[in-house]
Image 1 (cartoon, one colour):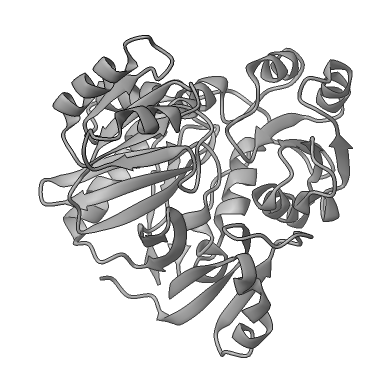
Image 2 (tube, helix red, strand yellow):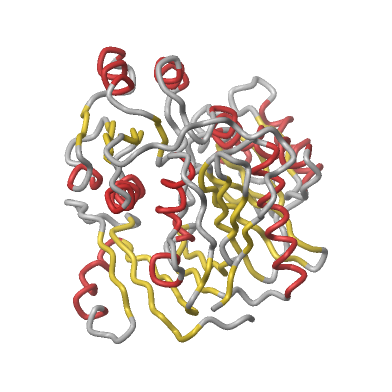
Length: 381
């Protein structure tokens, strides 16, 4: 077996003080998608209840959670009732309105904390935070498409970061949405119009050999556990596969662990985080982080003793983190759109674990499930 890293000494920041939830107590989950579904399933294995708050009808998490509230994030009465029914709140996606969080936090703890959420919600703030704690990122420059001088600002940004580059909305983008690649400045007006007036950031390209990600957790006692880095392949801006172990040397592996730990400590974080990194000739460059369980960590279901979902539940519930022991080499493949129709055939393969999300509508580009193939006993790349 091969392990990630579990720190035995609490981190130097002052850890939060919290009593562990007892079996039968309830974790509130903001968001009812597939990540919320998998969190609810893991909580149930630990004897903990879950209550999901989700605006949309018939969400994937609704099939497995103990209780679901279907209401808008602007519904203060529903939010108050939700907060009053749970013992701690976590979230499965970043874009929860601040007003909703204010109301909830006045009644019950939110883990990970509000700062982690605020930093990750804004790509510009995220880049500045990462640079501020000494971590390398792609070059970047803010752009305001709604400014009367937007074309001039974009030109200045291009001079700073170079071309090619990617113009991205600062908020709400995911899976390649809300961004456009810029090869030259001949279509400036159309490029700016594609942002629909939203504040944006221009990011320069980074030459890299591969993208890797680290799934890490920080417990309420400040201890940190990092799963082995996985190597990611994206197609059309959407994660296609994650393979573990990543093709990196031992020094790069340790640096990846250190980067994840630095982010967790700087945010005084509690829960699981996904950190995406570019492996470059000059070392690791941070692409972004997600303050939640992460698609590139799904491999842990079939490849590790404890998966990322249980690790997150342990952390937010005040339980001790598990040692992130990997017992197998694995490759996780997302089933996107019509790929889900292949699930029965894939399930015939030896050593394959299928996980479907229970979504009622199949759409192009929509994550419908994933398959994880066990490739053999754990090896080191």
